[in-house]
Image (cartoon, rainbow, N blue to C red):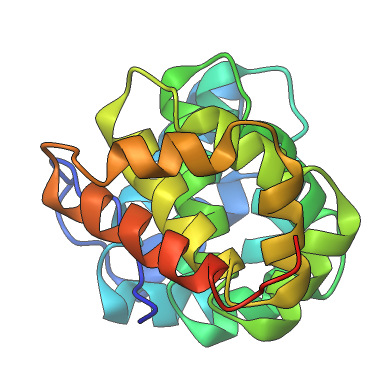
Length: 220
């Protein structure tokens, strides 16, 4: 079964639609880096709330602005842009917005391998949510090394990253193309098998489900 993944942390107070609109406007950086960092942090954490996600997704500049920030040099801005997009990808409207272009899928795939632990975690979550949508899943599989990056993330020392990566691979493996790509990564099945005895129940469940999905294809 497919399941959405949400990053839950200590959150700022709930923001009103007007405040969310102001944060989106501040993403441009015209008011300075500190304002931009605060705005993307606020949007990243606001996205755990369904009503806030709906409000953000109604703002036409929100997703394109966040995607553009994935390519910036500031680690904090990239980190929380990734978190914001990962939470927005819980909704079908968010996944659709990210699949329309702008490089979101490619950038998030690359960030799964980020040297910043938080960014890698959030990118794994984002990809896991994006692959819930068949169109996004196929686009991700066709556009870059998403499966190889996710398999590499299974060896992360960050427990949440491992959980998100295992969940994403479970969803990837519902597609024949995805199963073939998992088979093609050396050591992928061994890593997944080892994770079925993980002390984290969700990780163990996702790994077992991924291995079960892999059996749907008898020809690696």
